[in-house]
Image (cartoon, rainbow, N blue to C red; front, side, top):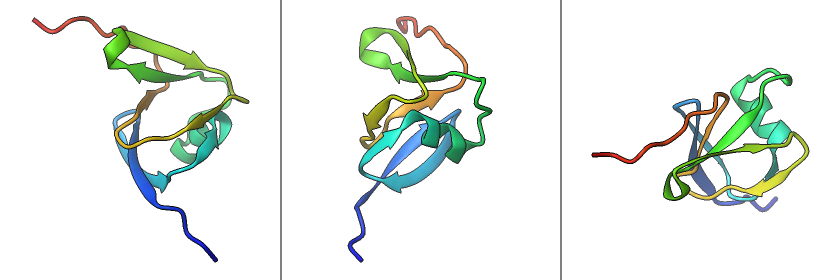
Length: 78
C-alpha cells in the first residue's frame, strides 16, 4: 500500500495531520466533529476574510491551511 505524504492543517484552531490529497469538505467536517448543518470556512488571510465551502466541494489541502466552522472576518493588523 502506498501512503500519501501528510500535511498539517487547522480546523477550529485544532491541529490535524492529514494526507496531502483532495478532500471533500464533508470529510473535513467529519474529521473535526463538526455537525453537518454547520458550514465550514477556508480562512484566506491574503484576501482579508474567509470563504464558505459547500459540503460536496473538493479541496486540495496544503500545509498550513486554516478552516473554521464560524465566519471570522479577518481585518488588517495594525
